[in-house]
Length: 154
Image 1 (tube, rainbow, N blue to C red):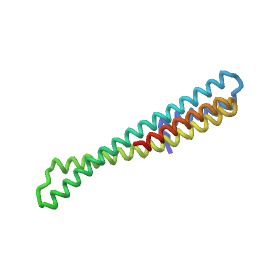
Image 2: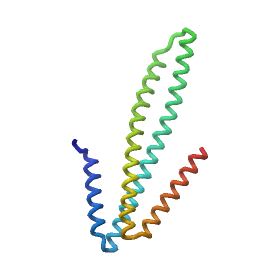
Image 3: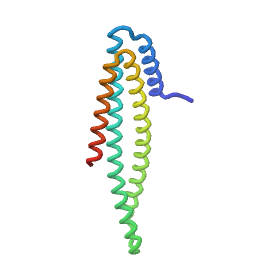
Image 4: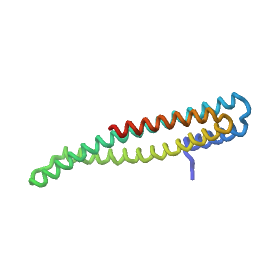
């Protein structure tokens, strides 16, 4: 199986992280590991935000599609002509939603991979600086709780 450029970069990044973990002796190495952990957390957060935006867009277009389908059904029920504009809008929204669903599915996979990277990086940091690792985990947990609380309020 052929790897994409991004997959190659991810593999290289993981190898560098593993090398860094093995060589961590100096405070600079701890700082480098901490920087990697923070970057991975930021990457995961951005992926989550993008996924939420795509999910909201999907809900919006699903509602439009649903309204168009109801209108089409009403026109058919009344034996009235259905405009090509309506049919085209239904087709375009359906295609758009299918593409968006694929993007959302891929982003969920990317989020899961990123979360694994975050956990691995924090685990590596825990070996050399348990206090900083605990701080990062607490930050992640607080953000996660805040997000869940906001989701419940919607």
